[in-house]
Length: 233
Image (cartoon, rainbow, N blue to C red):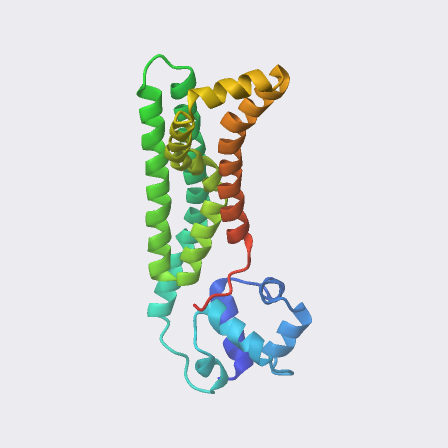
């Protein structure tokens, strides 16, 4: 069985046209046609791409032997098909859960008469993070690259909803340190500074520092995860 016959067989089993396979591999339809008629041979990179796409070995593609039994690899591919549908859906759901959780926490903290919205929002936030983490670990057990990609995509956005809750204890510590400033010093500043400058300074100190902390954490995590991953697999 020649390489061209193997490509034809694999393509038809997957239900692809020559043009669809060409788009997947980043080549022209004419190139695929020449491969299948054995007029030309794919280069090494395309051989590897064909093997990965059809879940076969490069050794089987290049050697003129009887096709391997299409059992385990096909089953693995069939089992992974739902993941291509579930992964983006679950990514959107978990990020939306984090956003809704933060909204409930803010509503309960600033507007609601009871702590119930805050508790529900915190539970939703924790559940969404736990679900995303669990699914990321599941994907990583199947394919390490897929698991890492999912978690990087999740945290690039979710950090903007999770970090306010994570930074809240630090903000409380910061406010606690401000209360330790001697009253005499505060009174001297109040008398020495013009009132508009004093009000601006208070606003920057009480609101600006927590806001800068929030933006610093979110931007650091987002930009860090947006960088291409070059670590060893």
